[in-house]
Image 1 (spheres, rainbow, N blue to C red):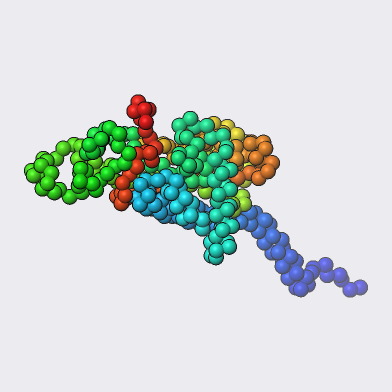
Image 2: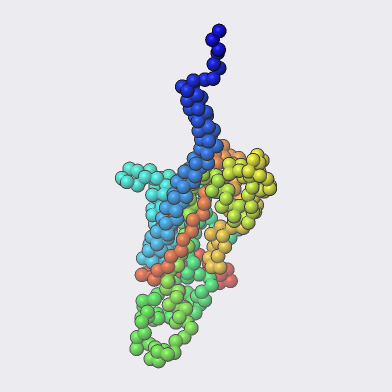
Length: 330
């Protein structure tokens, strides 16, 4: 009687091994693919943020350039900044696409300006320029911390309307012998130095940049918000929590961050970000603004800021000083 050999032949063994390898590869892909997808999306979103940051610096330059030739006009600077930032919002490669992107930017600027930011410091608008919208241009110098009452060399200095730095009664940029105080070049009054500094226009620009890459925008926003609030995050990337737990934690509860953001502060001018504004950003990202969230869903914004200074090429008008001292009654 012939014995039965239960051992598989070589071909069967090879097929079984190939099947095992395919199964192992599928499991490895299932474990690694989500992380790789996030890394790719994160790289794309961070690249776009970096581009927007560079464009914000360029927009600050364009804004101050408009201001130095338009008497420090904040409305002109505001529009110049938005035009410079249009490539971060949409296409600008032809006149039709440029018009569409401009309309979108205007819509965002108006819509964001109507939110209840309630910082109690920044006015809603300044001589026609929207300060609570998509872009805010803050004129840092000249400002209230400059002793304006000592700046002017005008016969009617008390009622001045503009900073006349090139008139016959103004301090010149370079000493001239027709001014007695400039005969001795070693002697310079404090007022002269203040005057020279006041003819430099310094602005700070803030831009609400919207992150639009799915999933990455949420993770980056949550990480930035937690860092601003000095709070650690725990759990997985897609379900981060402020409660300490391991990577398998499933709570995903970060709601305690809502009132924790400290904002971005400055010694001069308006702060780039106030605590009440942080709460509005959280409401937009978490969907806690009922009516708006139903209409547009969740939106993730980052405040990008830049400063720039340039010597005035036209007389600075008094009405464009943003930080007037209330005691002056102006």
